[in-house]
Image 1: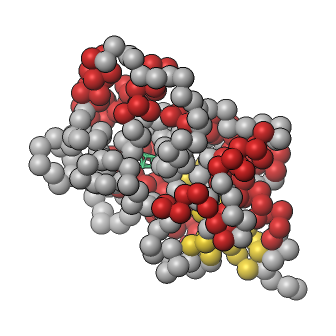
Image 2: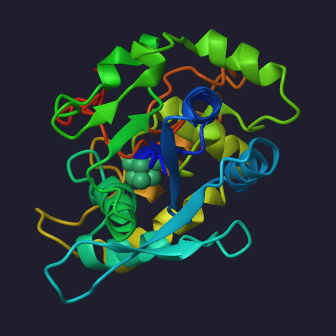
Length: 289
Ligand code: SF4
């Protein structure tokens, strides 16, 4: 029997990543056994989970839904557990466990992606013998700045750059013709209230639904002293807490321009948090490079 090579696809829950997964499955299923994984942080927009569920239902992605298992009191990274669309965490408790052990993430310290995406997926891939297989990540030709310098060493491939050069309009056009779409605005991309988002995105989110920040405020009140740091650890750029961010929004009188709703503007971790993070932010200033 002809045994096919394993090939990992990291499905982030974004449109680009979904488009890439469909292309790979349609074009290379005779050559590879694809292992499609999604690592849920528990802070995804409900529509992101619905979108992923629809991709499984309509396109047969057969995505393995994973969540991090944190090992408190041990010098060992997160392992994984398998969940489903129905049982996936929606209350932030997966993320909270990571914060409890490693501290609040921000631009200078980002254990969230490492533990909830990278280590969680690695743990699963190891369990199915796919840890040394190639991995596809959904970064487009117009996002080359997001390519990780260690990609080749880590056996990472970018099919939307190297096989099917694709830009954001190609992706949007393709989704327009499908039976379903992601259905959220760019500023709502996963995770809700992610510290990597620009202030304007946060302000749009506050205007639409400020309850997103109840969770970040609660995390800061419970865990700001966890982990190495000078003073309290907080989420947002320029060492601002959730309270600071909300106060700034009130100070500008909620005058953020809500008419700019380009769903792909500045798509980074805010649109999809990739399995292999890129350094597309200046950690000193918090600005996009
Ligand atoms: S989207 Fe932001 S908060 Fe969520 S895992 Fe990625 S970097 Fe962390």
